[in-house]
Structures are given as C-alpha cells and as structure tokens.
Length: 255
Image 1: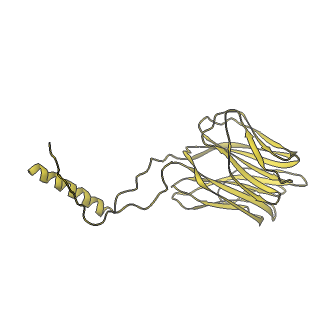
Image 2 (image 1 turned 90 degrees about the vertical axis):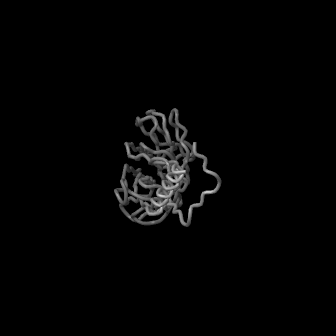
Image 3 (image 1 turned 180 degrees about the vertical axis):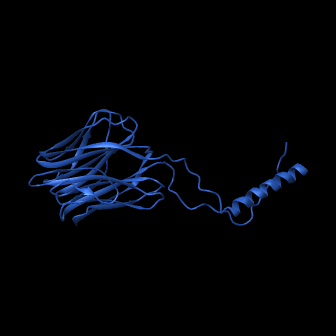
C-alpha cells in the first residue's frame, strides 16, 4: 500500500510541475541549422538557355533562379546530370519573369543549364547551394510591380528557416543588395534587357520574412519566394496546457 501511495504522490508532483511550468511543450523533431554554401551566375542574350559551371556538394539543396525578358518565355527544364529539378515558384509581369527551380538533396555535378521554350530570350541564371535543409515549405509567394525595388515576402513555419527570393526586372545593370542577403546578381545588356538577383533571408522565430534587391531605375519587375525548412515536423504552435483535474480510472497493478 505504501508503494502505491508513493507512486500516486510522484505522479501528482509531476503533473503539478507541468501546470506550474505553463503546460506540455510542443514536441517536434530536432532542427538543424541551414547555411548558405555558395553559388554561381551567368547570362545569355538572344538565346534559349543559360548554362552555369559549378560543383556543389552531394546532399545539399540546389536552387536555380532564372530571370527572363524580351519574350513571353518560360523555363521548361533544368539540365543537370543526376538531378531532377522541379519548379518551386514563378512570377510574371508582362514579358519579365522570374522562376525558382530546386532539388532538395542534390547529386554533385559540374554543369547546370536552364532551358526556356522561346529562342531569342534574354536570360539570367543563378545557382545557390544551401546545407542543412530538410524540406521545402509548402507555401510560396509572387509579387510584381514597377519601381526600383523588387521585393517579395513569405511567412516561415519554423525558427531559423530560410526564404529564398528570385527577382527579375528590366534593369540596365545587375541589381544590388536590398533586404536580406544578395547571393548573386547578373544582367543582359540588350534592347530587351534583364537584370536578376538571388537573395535569402531568415528569422529567429516564425514570422514574415522579406527579400528585395535594388535596381538602377524604376522598371517592371517580378519576384517570387520559397521557404527552406530545417525540420519536417508540423509548424510551431503555442504550448499545450493542461487544465482541470487529471483523473485516473481503472486498477493500478503493482508487481
């Protein structure tokens, strides 16, 4: 009998500690740290593709930002040995377009080519590599405008997740840094010009994260964004709190 009372007392103390502490914590997988590793850029005027030479690490996340102008072209595929890239987001404003294509866990190779469906296009392509990514977020965003500052935002699901921004505008030079980290930028100097940039940004807790670049004048632009997650668990939520009495029914068997 004494042993039974000791067990009941221990359970009562444990539940009391939970209540005083504000509730049961939300349980989720342990998150890793996402980090930018590197990348490369290139451009091609009056063309149907844009090719980059770069050797990323196997297992990292590869994303390619493509900026197009001059035609109503869209990206049809990414050619990269051993990798199957999928379109993650896009944004169009007339004949100016940005797209993001990605592969969560890539296989190292040395050449990446973005292919579009209309020849005679002006194309900028940018490759970015991140480590520590466990999943892509389900939500994306696209924004268009006419100004000097292409900008896009997206709400993250977890602490320290990254948001990648892809920006394209009819600029006369490569965009410069705005909000977030400008990882690379390039431009095609032609009649139907295009400048494009790849950015990333993060926040210490789930929140609205903004990415932007700065162009050399007020021009038509299109920006899109995706989320890189450090966990595959559900989105963070408030702690679950136990209220009221905890009732134990049935017999307690002690061996």
